[in-house]
Length: 391
Image (cartoon, rainbow, N blue to C red; front, side, top):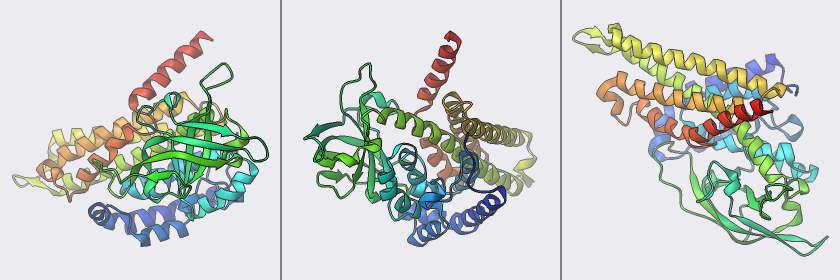
């Protein structure tokens, strides 16, 4: 069990400031983010000053030190607006930063974590490959060790796909196979690869269905030479465990983001239903519209309760595998249904590009894919239950 570094009183202040920033500063500029496909520099600067690039990094490394229970409350606020905002610093706090927090050596932490926490360094999580997505065991990127102490090095070759923040990243937390899987482990290690290392090439920005302003791209590694100190934790067998742990924690966070997005879709739906008229009557007076609003509200309330309970179970160590997958599965699927109903409630106007629910509909579709697809979550949940029963 871990103890939060931030008191409840201080956290409520952080939460209130974030809520104010999201709803009064970012929400009015969502159309700008969408049309320009980028988060404006002044919003990035404000996020940095607020400590959002390192809210989940321990205070000893310059972060705010929020635990997962606090993280999900913040994530629900961040999910309320364009998901590009959260994506800008999501990997610093989440799947990339947490690999260093949980598994890095003292030297690796001292070199990188403070810069990650302040936003001076943007860290990317380089796991997904053309032939290995939600299941990291299929990795093909390879790292071969050359030489011996104290001048040993690693040669890295491979290609990563759909890497968040790759076009702006300073550091790639990169997973690679060092040997075939055997009885000793999966043979997957994780390396710290600065973006300016010779042999690292960033592809063009991906053109995606939604989440404008959240940039992804392919990253290729061709004979990239790394010092021995780039191996996270000084161990070849940390990678697979680090990937699974970081992804599981990240799934709870994404579930919370989905709840925030669903809440926004619900709020937009209620506001529209109360003001839009059909035949002189507000459409919110129609029982079929009320039924859709009821389904939205029920989903949001259930998702919020599930996320909070799952985060608590993570903190206590009670469940760090099945519950995160269940929360991610339910909340992201729920957000998709709530967004779909929001478009339906808006009618034809909900299909128009400048209407928030149209953007939300496209944005939340990705939540069912990254950090492990809904299908992978079902396999984790079902397989975990059967294994537990067999024991």
